[in-house]
Image (cartoon, rainbow, N blue to C red):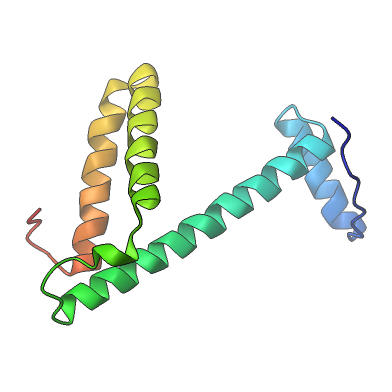
Length: 121
């Protein structure tokens, strides 16, 4: 599959740093930069999703009688549960305790978002 090319103008010190980091990770500069861009996009998507969740929680805390399900599509719910299951599978293959630690961390984050210091879930 043909790939398009882009040109970036970067300061020499940044190019040197990126080249060194790529080498440290055993990657070409191109592969390393593609990984950085992909990671940045994932981080942005995560921040946006987190903001949507915070907004939904705020609506709920302001007197909604039920969780605002109309703000969460079926596709989003499927993606959440599919991602959870994939991560569980991967984590179990690598470290069986990773799932437990991740669940605990997730519950702590939810408690922070909801303002629940007692850990009710």
